[in-house]
Length: 547
Image (cartoon, helix red, strand yellow):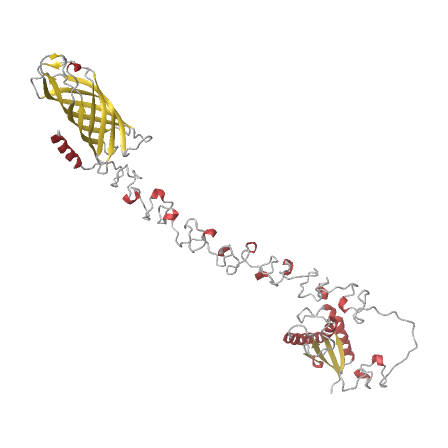
């Protein structure tokens, strides 16, 4: 028996194209096993118990065929020793002793495997099975012995143990039920088996269908048989962007600028940005994309489209005239403490509500004179009387003419009541200029544009000049000390010039007029008080006769 088993085992070990288990790819198998059984000679006239059970040995060779994941077909051929009795049987012993011969057995078996996908897999390390079949056995080689045969039904259990070299080790235990000679017996087998065949490859990519994750599409071995059109190392079936090379962490989609957002999901695919902003940049880091940020270089507020608001008044600094102090939208971000619609910076009376005509100052008696300049703020008055009403005329008193300088001109009409002068120079000496000073000639804030209420005062000068055609007039502008001295100087000059232009338009010859400005250099009152500053903001007309 050793002479038979050794070359058979060597032949199996040298076979090619094998794997551990029969499968849909490798449908065929061959094997060899050593067999032990207790079968005696198949003689119809001799009962099994006539001469007792005989232990016999043999070898089995077989061909196996894969039918399905659950069933295999096995066709074994076995050769074993059998014992014949010589002569008659007396007391259950042959008179002539025993003769050894050879028996040939041919089987056809159906094996039920448990690797149906629910219990075991086809490539399980240990694969148990059950088998059932039909077989025939008969004597051979010795023509002088009876040549009877036996038909039986074999069934049993077996195990396949898969080893790394691709050979299955087989162990079986079975029982043969005779249906012709009533010679039932047990048998044990141990051997080796080698599956072989050609693996299926439907798509022809060199990877067998059982190992091919994409068996109907040619692919790459590195990707288990799946294709990779864009060559990024990610199988098309797993690639969210199969037509363009991408990154594994993005399921095969590209991220051109490496900002952590795929190009397909990147709202700004041509510039690196932030994942939180769908790939768009935010230079100032205020959480608003540069494209939507009205102030992209400085951090701001979402409500103001990315622009800052230092004073927190809801107006972006770029649109706020007063960015460092909270104000009103209607005044472009500037404050108005008294709520009169005039910004505090332009309001001459920022703590008390007033009118635009009086630069934010109130006028309780409605006489057009601001309360701060009105000597009688609760009574309507005149400009000439600084807001006070005309005095009630008393009964005519005896006319008393006072002429202090004895020049024949009453003091009330004398511009120089302490100096003797001439009437044609308003009671002043001929060489002396006569000053007419007005602080009620008003202009737009910071401008040389004259307000309409100033015209009546200037018209008085026009009348005086008309009544005194020989006089020349020098017009001088003055300001208070508030603000920049250089600006005050310029402002006094242009305002004096505005008065000169008005007189010319009213018919006064240009040759009789001149103008100049002194800024805040010549004060007539204390600049520390509001009243004093009001008096210092004035225009003086110096009338003199030609020298």
